[in-house]
Amino acid sequence: MIYKRSSALFAEAEKVIPGGVNSPVRAFKGVGGTPIFVKEAKGAYLFDEDGNRLIDYINSWGPMILGHAHKPVVDAVVEKAKKGTSFGMPTEIETKIAELAVLMVPNIDKIRFVNSGTEACMSAVRLARGFTGKDKVIKFAGCYHGHSDSFLIQAGSGASTFGTPNSPGVTQGTAKDTLLAKYNDIANVEQLIKANNNEIACVIIEPVAGNMGCIPPKEGFLQALRSLCDAHNILLIFDEVMTGFRLAKGGAQELFNVKADIVCFGKVIGGGLPVGAFAARNEIMNYLAPLGPVYQAGTLSGNPLAMAAGLAMISALNNDAEIFKRLEEKTKYLHQGIANVLTQNNVVYTINRVGSMISVHFDEGAVTDFDTAAKGNNDTFKKFFHGLLNQGVYIAPSAFETWFITDALTYEDLDFTINAVNQVAKTL
Ligand code: PMP
Image: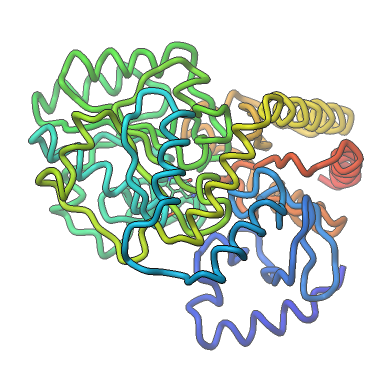
């Protein structure tokens, strides 16, 4: 494939944007090469500035669960835009999307909209601290909750890809309140809680991790976390920025039948516009300004275009009784197809999958936490990535990311992808 125009555009971008990108994972640093500049996208496909067509397995890192330029979403945004793009005053559509979210997601009474997943998680932790009157937070190594200071401690995603788990600029004072636990290791969490008796406000977790590849929670792990939190008066925060409205209507809480105290959203809930949200039962949400003492705000929060996109998106999901089953079947088909061709070609691999999240790791042991995810062979991953890209299949340019399956993918697209994997596997 030719990437002449993308390369030229990247060279221009580098002069005025740090690294040529507005978010590090886009830069291809982990895999080498030049990022591809997108011109437009429709359904399961991206079309780049050189006229190449790529089957998209990133889907804007999650939001485009129904494919790109999904008509009801685009129409809703266009219609809203004609009536003004921002007011900084209440609008009816904010209540509409809030009502639907509260209906779809278990254990929440109220939801507050923000502009990104980062803001959602940052605000959720502030709320947990305010509500419990305690300071410390437990997070898991390899989980990513956005780029706010307290989460940039062994974060996954780009922070892992670039080998900068602890960012300069985060003060010691902030870092000391974030305690690190090992994903899927309940004894480790218990130890931390005991060692910090009555100081922990919340445990925040990706209920299915998606920022160190896709890592499912071990059987009983989330339930055990719930019990530990109950026993120690700690709030359990599910960061469902990836899993919310993707694994089930009610997200991971529904899928695993575990109740979180605060739930964070992003990605799908905004239909591709900049939206995040956090939600909880009344007792907790009423602690938030203007009702309560914990401050949180946003000039563009609840923006009408963003709410229109989000409402169209989650309505479409709510109205389609088969959507999550269909997504899982497609992902399972892809999983089996890829596993078969990798096995046939004697490639060492592990595939993890939950619903429509899947990742391929080039190591044979089980991938259950950050340490085992980091054992994957990155040279093999680089070849795999570029080999697929050359055949028009676009996966995330990092081994520390999950793939996101969209309903716009046809079985022909999946077969095309499996065949592309077969071709690459011969070269690994
Ligand atoms: N939480 C999780 C689980 C995420 O995957 C991400 C982003 N990938 C975030 C939070 C941060 O969201 P945003 O990039 O919208 O700030």
